[in-house]
Image 1: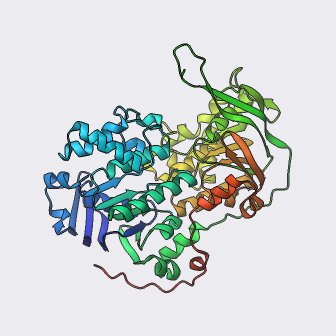
Image 2: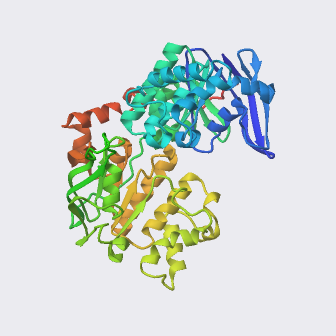
Image 3: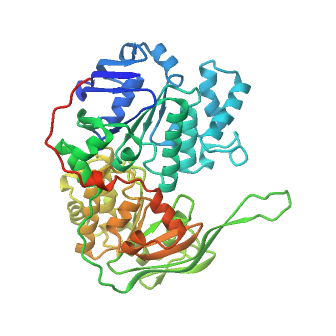
Length: 537
């Protein structure tokens, strides 16, 4: 179906892709793996004719007898959506926030002249049903902001498959999703390949997902394919050093000193948080949704505690209550003996002792400020000390950056470096507790391994306590002493991390672990072979 030969691409003269070549067949899943900046997404954009301004592509990309690189923009517009569909990494950015989901799915059919508006909306309904968004719960007049992350990703998939394209490109379709939603999305994609006969290009940095999904795999580094083979032979042999490095990083466990116990830093007792829902009748009472239902937990001095659960289970609501950003209807939160209560105000002492690292570091920074001002933000709680620049320098060097980075802007850094700056901001004021909210979920495996090593090192050096909130069970297993499993606002299981993962007791915990994709153990234990040159198509 698709043959790519010697695809090279440069942007304003800077080389980005170098002699990329591969083949794809109907009904086949082709996995393209590599870390951030390796050229995976740029390969897909080049094939779609969506490379950024200033890009020049050479080589050939023959799809169904036509060279995509030689087609006009009008020809590519006719091709996109009809014969080649694409699922982008961030559905909230790919969807129009002021257009209903029904209109967005129908738009593809209307633009390509496949149906009038009424017929297109009827077909949109079928497509949304196909991706698991039934009419009784997800009418066509819903807007993207009314859906969860996994539901928005399903809408993006419905848009991409509206005209049953022959080739579907999925760029990190499950990166920020919890394990159960990820499993559902992957099963959906697998079913589409099987039922529609389409070919799927799956771009990801998650080797376990590729092992579970792909028929063949290509490993990309610095804009070039360094290894390509059928999935099982490639995973068993790992001929190229870069492939071996990716495998090592995917199962990396940081060295951590054993937790010896200590006084509680954070205490949450019987926390309750309700949200009022819309009235069902004009004068009827407003029903309530209980997002946090009598939750209790503790985090000891120098301890790492993991909080896991799927989207909508109440993790984020509980986190906002702990941070003093939302009031509770019942229960209490105490940090180092001080009460945390958003309704009555949170003291400066509490703010100093508790900092947070968010999932999206770029979104949590003001892009107009330089790094020195960004990292110094927590000092507004105590007043800017005279030696604040020295303390910012110390924090940056602690996370592996340099004093010279203080004068740069946040857009000048990679995703992993931005997360390091976010961690530097959190530790600059020397808090007792750091809350990490999906802090490594969007990072590729090598940067994630480096970040986990950094967190372990900082904990040993500064005696930090961590509340690690994540849907990535492999990360929680690697970095925590205890783990709590949350479902429907309640803690359904808790205990030492090793015990919960090896002998889970609650059915929901078992389901979470079963839904996590993993590389077959005999593939992981296979020996590495020396590198051989990639045979170009």
